[in-house]
Length: 248
Image (cartoon, rainbow, N blue to C red; front, side, top):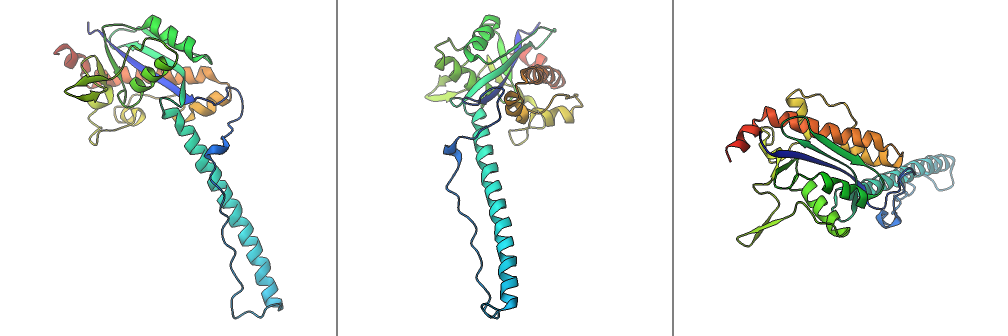
C-alpha cells in the first residue's frame, strides 16, 4: 500500500471577523477620483432653454458615472482584500483535511482558533509519508509552513535547499496538479480537472469561503475542504499516481 496522503487547506484573510459582514479595511481603498463633468458644447447658448436641458441631462449622467466609479472602486478593493486569503502571512487557516491516497482514512477540522486547528492537524500528521496537495508548492505547503512558524509550532512541510536553490516540491512533498494531463501550461484548477474527468463536485467553490466564514457557516467550509481531498484522491487514481509513487 502506498504511504501517501493528500492535504487541503481553506483560508480567509487573517483579520476577517467570523460571523460578521465583510468590511474592507480603508488601507485597500485608493483615493477616489470622480469622473470629469463635461462642459457645455459651443453650439449651445449659455442660459438658453436647450442649454439648461443639456446641463440637467449632464448632471444625471455625471451622477450615474460617479456612482458606477464608486462601486467599481469598492469592488476592486474588496477583491484585493479577499485575495489576502492566498497570502501565507496575511491569511489564516479556517479548515484542513487530510486523506490517505489509498483506503478511506480521512481527517478534518475547522474553527476560529487557528493554533488549535494546527495542533489538531499535527496530531494526525503522517510523518515520513509522501504528502500531495493540489497546487501545494505554490499554496498549501507555503501557508502551512508560514502559519506554523507564526504560532511557533513545528512545521511538517517546508522548503528544501538543493544546489543553492530553494524548492517547495521534493520526493516527499509533491504537487498533485503536476500529474494532471490538463495542466499543459503548468496550472489547472481542481474543479476544472474534476469536470474533465467527470468527478462530481457538489460544494461551493473555494472563492466563496470568505463569504461562508463571514456568515459563520464553518460547516460548509469544512464540507468543501473534505470534498477537495476526496476529489483529489479520485483524480490521483485517474492519473495513476499510486503506480507512479510505487516506482519511486
